[in-house]
Each structure stands twice: as C-alpha cells, then as structure tokens.
Amino acid sequence: MARLGKGVDPGTPQQHRDPERGHDPESQTTGGVEASAVLVANPNFGQDKNKSSSDHGNGSLSRTRSRRRRWSSASISSVSGESDHIGVYDMMAQNKYQSLDENGHMVDAYRFKVSRRYLETDFIKEIQICTNLQHPNILMIYGVMMNGKNRPWLVMEEMEHGSLRDVLFNRSFRFEGEMLLNMLRDIATGMVFLHNCKPPILHRDLKPANVFLDRNMHAKLANFRITLKNRARGYAGTPYWMAPEVLRREGPHTKASDVYSMGILLYEIFTREKPYAGMNPAMVLEKVANRDLDEPFRPELPAELPLDVEALIHDCWAPNPELRPAFEEIRCRVNRLQVKEINKYFEARTARNPADVAKINPRNSMSPDKLYSQLFPQHVAQALRQGHKVDPEVFDCVTVFFCDVVGYTKMSSSMPANEVIDMLERLYTALDDLASKHDIFKVDTIGDAYLAVANLHKPQPDHAARIARFAVDAVAAANTTLVDAHNTKGGCVNIRGGFHSGCVVASVIGTHSPKYTIFGDTVNTASRMESLSEGNRIQCTKESAELIMPYAEEFGVEVVPRGRIDVKGKGTMSTFWVTRAPGMETIPSIEDSLL
Image (cartoon, rainbow, N blue to C red; front, side, top):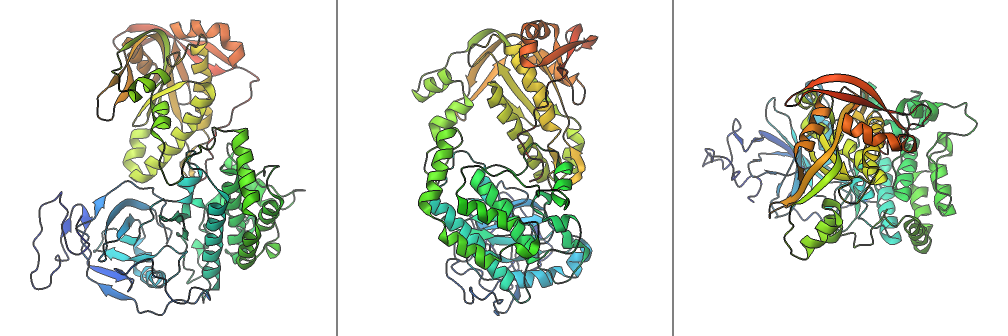
C-alpha cells in the first residue's frame, strides 16, 4: 500500500501529477476518494504515535502550531467499518478507509456528513483544537481532508481492536480483572484530561461505541464535541446515556452529565448487557427523566456485583448532579478496586452461564471449532474438520422460514449505507439470539432476508410450532429495533415472514469459504409465503399449519385461515396467518433499540 501523498490507488488509472509541486492537482480524484485541496493537520502527523506528548496531566492544550498541508488521499483503500466509530462534530461517518502515514503507521480515515453552515463557521476552529489535543487516552486526530463541496475526510490513528462496544458484545472475548481495570483507568484519565482543559471540554456522548482500543487494549476516547459556544446542539448525545436533567432540558451538558454516562458505561462493562434491553424506548426515557419516582429508574445491577463497584455505579448515576463524583475521584476509586474480586465476579457469571464468555485468548478471533459449530450442523462441522467430503443429505420434513424488512429498498436508497448495515446488524443480532433460544438453525442472511430451518440440525418433532413461535417473537424483536439507532423519529423495523414444511436437500457448496445451504421446492414455497405476507405478519402453508396444531398450546401460537391466494408457480393455495395466542406474554427483543 502506498503512503499518503506518495502513491495512487491501484484500482484506478494513474492521475496526472504536477512534477514541480509533487502532488495531485486540487481538482482531481482518485479511487473514489476526493484528493484533498487542503489539510488542517496535526503537526505530529508522521511521527511515532506511541511517543508521549507533553502536558498530559494538567489538561492544558498542546501549544504546537497547527498548520495546513497538501495531502493526497490516493493511496487510501476501502475496508469495512462501523458508522459511529468517529463523529467528533455531530457527524456520521459514511465510509472508512485505511492507509499508511509518512512513518509507515496505519491510519484510519472516515468520510462524514457535516452541514455547509457549520463547515464554514466553527468546523475549522474545532478541528484545529482537536488536532492539538495530545494525550495517551484521547484518540489522535491527524487532520481533515477537504475538497470543495465534497464531504470531508477525518484522518486519525488506527485502533486495532475497534470500539469497546465491539468487545463487550463479542461473546468470544473473555474479560479479565486487570485488563478491565486498565480500561476503566484509561477512560477516567481521558475524561480528567478533557474536563481539565481550558476551557473545559465535555464529551456529551460517553458510551462504549465511543471508546476505542488499540493493539495493547489501551482505551482512547473519541466522538466528543468542542463546546466553543452554547448552542442548540448542546443536547447532542445518545438518549440512554443522557443524564435525567439533560433529558428534561433543564440546561446544557455539564461535567456531571458526563459522569452519569460513565455510570451507564460501567453497567455495560460489568454486565456485558445493553441498558434497558427489550424495553420500550419512550417509556424508558420518560421514567429516567421523572424526578417524582420513589426510586430513580436505572438498569438493574447484578446481585453478585462487588460492593465497591456497585457503590461507584450508583454514585455516578445519582439523580442529583451535585452528588456525582468528579472523574478524578472515579479514577481513584477504580485504582482501589481489587483485581481478585473482579476476576471472582466474572468467573461466577461465566460458571452460571458458560455460553456467555468463551475461555479463549482475548487477542485472538473466534476459534475455528467454535466458528464451524455456528456455521454448520454438528455432524457436518465434524466431517469438515476431519477433511472429509460432505455428501448431500435428504431431509423428508423440515420447516423453512424466511423473513425480510418491509420497505428495505426505499431505506437502502435513502439512508447512508453504514446506517443500513448498522440496522441490519442490530436486527440480525436479535434474531440470532432468538434462534438460539428456540433451538433453530440459521442457514443464511441474504441482504435483508433471514433464512432459518428446524428439524434439520437435530430431530425436532415440533419443528413447525417451534418455527411459528420463533417467527412471532421475531416480529416483536423487530418492532423494538430502531431503524436509526440515534433517532427515534425514524420508528422501528417492520418485518414480514413466511414458512412452509416439506422435503429439502442440504449440502456444503464450494471449497473456498464453504457454505452450508438447503435446496428444493420447499425452500421456494417458503420464500413465496414470505413475499406474499404482510408487514408485521407471518404466513404459512396448510402443511405447516397442520403440523403446528398438536403443539400450538405448548408454544403459545395460533393459526388463523387467510383463505386462498395466488402463488406464482403453484396456482392457488390455502394459507394461514400465524399469531400469538391470546393472553400469551410478549417476548421482548433481546436487542436494545438505542445504541
């Protein structure tokens, strides 16, 4: 990979270069990435990022002079990335790219949206301040590339382990006391630095998605705003992490509101659960903001949580902002926490639910055995591990389920791609959890379509009823999954689903990235049931309905005749709606809808 300012994208034709000036003309673009006309750059760009800079302790801003540079983005190559990794100025990253800096270090670049008015007023001032923030626990911003009316690119140091959110909800990642306390110490130290800056810098959106981990698992803060002015945007943030006084609009963010967010973050770290999971977002925010409740409404803490940790969390999210500790005190209290007690706590949680946390090296990815067991039925995974060829198998009667997102085509054309991916990730995570709960086998996801089957990976006489219960729970889960995780006005996801029972053939296809899939007319018919269904409804064939009936009461579902409908390639068919039985409790989505 060529260095920034030195090379060209290997996937595009070479651009004309000015031999005297040694950089691309301002009007050119390369590889789909705008060549920058100007860069407000960190003067330390190209230096060893591990070298510490002066003035880390007292919070004053580094006085090194910010300067403008010419910088080509030609060598940046596309990689996958989350939309909310960086958003320092109420921005949402649209693309993430990587390249090498002048010293051979990898850097990340994010393209983001920002209003033209803001770009022409405060943006450059805030970038200049950010590029001078030098601290080991603040994500280093090298600069911004801009070219006319094109969206700017924010360039920063690479974070090899991604965000803390990625780690928390990766069940193959094992937390240990010393590593966890180091992370908490890093977070508190970074916040001490921001709050001690002159003028103070408030984060206003402190949450796991805005804490990043480098290759040594050191935590660095990102996505904070420079509060140059007290403006309407002072209420930026994510609702579940907002302090009650901020939700009530009693005033702008304060240091104490950052401390409240730290309390929610501590809850997530010690439970590895999302706050208020499965609850109605509007109800949650109303209760959190309600000052008249006998007890403040907060996430429920585990009974076995160490007392010192419990006390710290309660103090951080205290309803009275004046009673919340400063981050200097939080750092001191973190330093007093005992590694042995933390390890004992996590070991107890693991022993109670060993599937929650795999005992593997946290620096490694998922083990091959675990990956195989998730991608293939057990007997297929065993054959592949032993190097044996997997022959096609015929299954006389399984139940095949499809669902997709209503209005997905319009969403994908009107929403940024990264927001669509984030929505699907949250939805599929909820459906995957339900698949595990109901013991059905997820076969594949194709775009917005989700394919699952029962009675294939193991004998399940109740397979049709099992799929029916999964399906109605999937609708409920989708209805608590926000389309836009940062904006409740976009509403929640609606899905439609359908299933059919019959014969299929299952086999592993391909040698490179082998894929386990199913074939047959049953699959086609199930797909037709989904495409001819309606929003927030589940449709099934007569064959499936008859198989459901003996188990309907046990699984809490009902089948209601829809009548005869025209089905492409099948003529007219009698189909049925699958509904939740009256009086059966709604199973909330495992996914919390405000990330």
